[in-house]
Length: 368
Image (cartoon, rainbow, N blue to C red):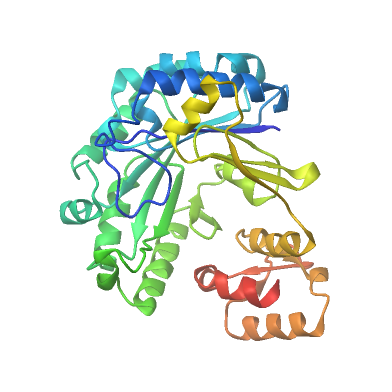
């Protein structure tokens, strides 16, 4: 496996809209960083043989990895011998939040080998940040970006949320103008989705407003030199998120840490670690497996994933995938509706338009 993901579960506070396994400081029983470090080191020792001699990408996600000191990361991952597996071309990303970024620590992460930062900004209005449960302030964002670039990082991505209650196009414009004053290379813009039991769910804008906001972000970003290369992602030329592309192109990856997923493409085998830091640590202390479940993908799952992954990207799909008259007819309808278009540089392929990206779930179900 040429891609490695490591899940660091600690957060300053758990955001109510977040579906990822993470623990805020209020979860005191489970949040023992030293115990996690030793458990992660055990798992790294168990799984090191699955990694390639040279790694194409590494991704530290969470949670908030920037809450874990670089020395702790280095000790936990010693069994992987990362210094011998990384090359000058390895993309090594770490997620961070504005409130957890300090200049000296950023320099230490750079010395560890991290060369790309993905910062969770989410919004640039104080009332939005408060409603979302974010612990950082609007003023902390530019200060954090200044520290990241001052530490020497040149490949920097930021996350922004779209479809926040009461959000307007002017709010999005102001946020993007502030963020692109810095030389960011990548932006992820996600639509805020909430379960019905969340009190904020009734306040979400209607689907048409959400669609218009997504299309507005597309127009603004592409007019400012970014390519809309994936449903929610925009990149400067040559700066696509290679680790995520590895997922979307169906390649193998190894995941370490509680709740982490792994995929062995050769054997169509996917597995997931347990989503409990306490149980994860306890099992590894006994040298036992932390795998919660595994799945061998059958033909039907492979067919669905083939379409799902291809339609996420601006490279699209080859027209010879349209094997049935029903598929061909549906694509013709989608083209007439402005949801699918001929690929601009490859006549043998078709792809989703910006509007199609926003409605991709329905299109995938219709074609898979």
